[in-house]
Length: 100
Image 1 (cartoon, rainbow, N blue to C red):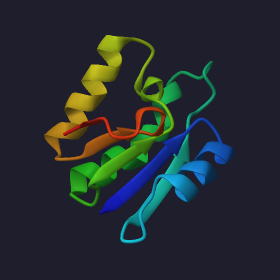
Image 2 (image 1 turned 135 degrees about the vertical axis):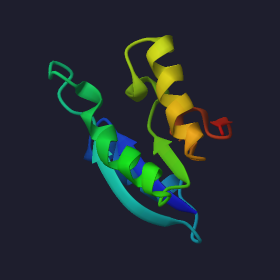
Image 3 (image 1 turned 180 degrees about the horizontal axis):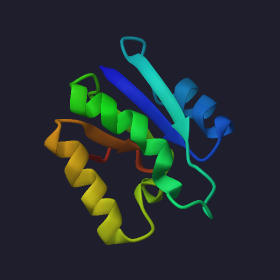
Image 4 (image 1 turned 60 degrees about the horizontal axis):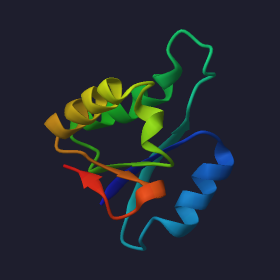
């Protein structure tokens, strides 16, 4: 499975890499959330979204679903867009739950 890892910081990225990724998975990239005061704090999602559009991504692994947006509505919109490209979303906080 081709996976992109997205977290708050590098520490979270390394933790997910160590505990949430299988031996048969391929990590195609990772990114961290931009500064929460920036114009677009979800800017770290730009590259995984481009990979999804190209068909190069199977799963977006997050440290927390809240990284997708500031409200439940924003989170659902991001999930819907990724799902439209057949990308599942997994949160390390609730491993086992997914959107597809």
